[in-house]
Image (tube, rainbow, N blue to C red; front, side, top):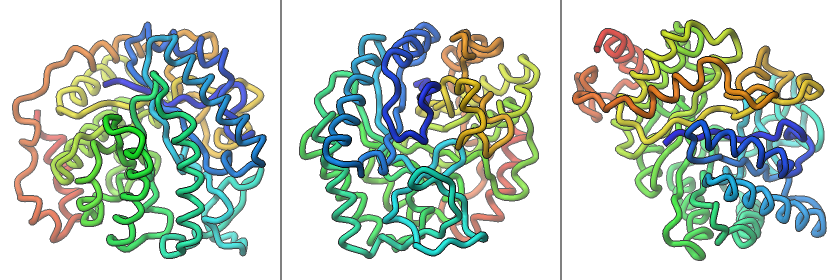
Length: 372
């Protein structure tokens, strides 16, 4: 499965509005011609905290977007609630502490960037109920649309204040119940960051309940793993971390890639070779960080202004033409057969890995690079 996240190049994210439907329709048709099968549309929780009339308008706009995806012959998943997009956390007021602190992480909240610490909302029943109520309204509005075939839930949520496993399990079940009450067949996947491989026990419990997992976070890898550059290096790293995740969690894994495009993409032949390695790892899919970059006037807006070259990570240019390496790479990914020994670089059991994940994460990376 080859898919991409769609962030509106016209409105961006800071307006808290759904993507402009006409532009989405154009881009979706190009994506279909490239062989993509699915678009992921992020839904920011703060977008659903508006007044009743504005909230209804947002949901109506989202349905128009799904109409465009359907007309283009693609399917859609919603990332709901989406939290970390293009390297920046987008959070509603009830997930942060009220006191600003320059040492805290950068978040986008109520129209601007701030430095705020996460609030431990997991044990706050009133906030959990509020979040589920917001999510329930979203689910009720869009479920049944023919384009909508799945959900990516709790995306990177385990990183926004660390919960106990029991609490996280309860929250995951609650979100899943809201969907399953209305749809018993749609896919439900969970979003994790690569950092979960350094402390995987909680994710091992949670991921057994979902249909699959998206692994993301290549913008910030553990020190010692960031020895690769460009898109080819990123694809190789994603191959390794995806294979390791599939082995550790025992679930279908999709990997998010695209950060390597924030610099020069690199040699097309190296990119194609790395694409072959990725495709040969028997992963469930590849998700591109962004389908199309923003219009020039948005280059300085969050999130693009926070990361050098971030406006370049799209598969398509503003003229809707794919970048020169895109079509050859996608062809390699679609046509490469799975290797017979995808885990031949692993020389221990999952139980042994859990004894010292940090040591084994780095050690197995060297094994992976040496294997064919």
